[in-house]
Length: 105
Image (cartoon, rainbow, N blue to C red; front, side, top):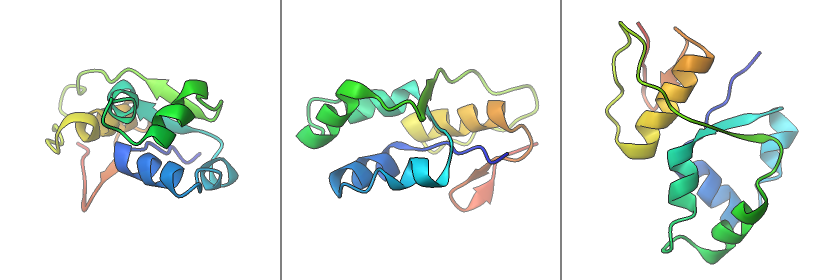
């Protein structure tokens, strides 16, 4: 099973260009940490993105990020990206890929 965890930017831009339909076509579910939803709902976010979030689609699964498991190094990318890596680590321990490198024990 492929576990897909999204950060803010991919969702933001796919929604803006009206291409968000590709995600459920490719993946059964896309996990996002709560911080991603908070960033997308920010008052300075594009109105179309905030409107899209009024009805979160069933394929988008919002998860709380938990502290990193013992022995797992923190990604330190910042904010929602760190939380996305944490959500991925919980969903697929030992197999987490982040931009440019693996983040697993």
